[in-house]
View 1 (tube, rainbow, N blue to C red):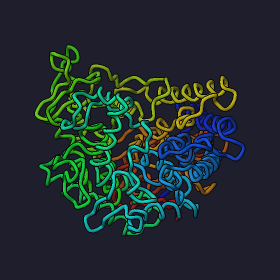
View 2: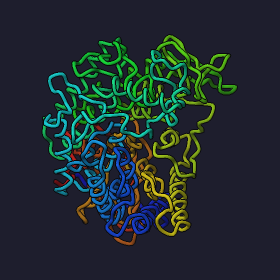
View 3: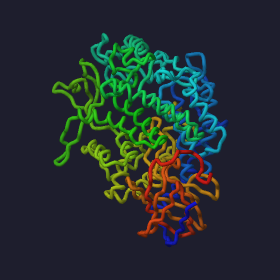
View 4: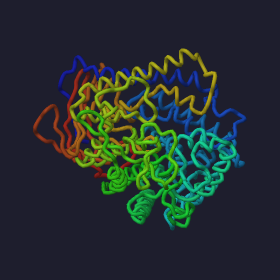
Length: 630
């Protein structure tokens, strides 16, 4: 393996390096307290209660610890991995004992029985993080294959290989036929939660406005229509299944998984072309667009008339990322790019300040009708009705959805960087500020501050994000102190709301990676670190890493040994060895050294540092979870 040795003294390590190592230690101690306070004596979550009957919430439980294996894989303590394993096994036991209205448990064959891929995308982030953390664990590998085969093998009925479609908006280990909206018992899909806030997804019903659905009798009518129009067939959100299948490929290298991902993505691209360049949000089991919506390409579950681009943009972006990873062909990105461009072309410029205009893009599409409903922050008519123009409505700045950012990150093209700039909300988003409060699960836009750092506009970012992460952990520890044990009220979110581990800053700084798309994306990174002495992923004890440049040429990376022992580490190009080190220069040297390898070995004596300027050939290798020395 190509070798580099550090020679530059770092007797006083930089503050960011010390803060980074302290954060790893803080996470481990916080997880111990979390498990002691919020899991029962058998290591099981306290929710669902024994008498619970339902289909929703398993993903929320897993979200309470899903990122612990990821932090372990970056260099965190062994306790993060072990505690995560214990919590997940406990959650599986609890889920397999919790009944649904359908006569079988919430979790069957260790997988959710029948749910949408907004929620299953969230819950399976744990599955993908375990691939990074413990690819040698036989149970992890077996689950990866069995989960993927629920779609690739076709025995569950989830997937129609001839028509290349997932056969239901909800699917899982029991197949796609257990989707009954009335079984959700008015939450979270009831009128008060969703419809009065977002407006009706259809204009051909007997209701005049969304507020009419607050009448329970009308809500029952809504469930009838939902079951008629939204309980069967394919939707763009199902493209998140490509992560489950890509995960199996990363463990096995089996070409049938790669083929499934590219075939399914291509099917959606063909439907989009057939629909005039806009991805349809509902496809019947026959393969016909709008089969259950009287021919309309909009009005499907999680579609253009429901949550709009916030939901529709997930699947195309995730699937394109996975296809690029598997094939190396960045042309796949033209699919999500085309959808973003449709919205940009329909956008309206609104003055934000004396210098800048913000582009308000439409997030939804629907038929003409009454659009009086609570939609704060969107453009309205003079009478207060939500602006509707040629079918498009809910014109507002791009939300904190990271789709444009991920498009740039995967391509690193100037045009995609310009799209990010074009969609900036100049009225509120300060790109040179880090919010010290605990961010929400979506990332709260921290990628934009990181981008400002990479472009030289925010040099304080490493210190600020690490300080914010430490404050966020301390906020959660204060909650633990105040509660002194299990909370008085336990619901499906209780673990997620108290999770003391925050991974985003470490991802950005150590791996040059953004927050994965939260609803089911895989980690995509520039580099990844391994500890050959301990035979595990992550930075060795006492070693800190900082990615200081990410562009189409390559990366700049600084490594510091803050500890008292000499260390060795292996730096891999990409999270899965998918990239190649074409050339490296160390400590400002002008001479190129050419590793022509996906990994390099770095020797870091105690109290030293090294700066590596690396040219990368991106997506040059078949990706794998395998450790680089294998």
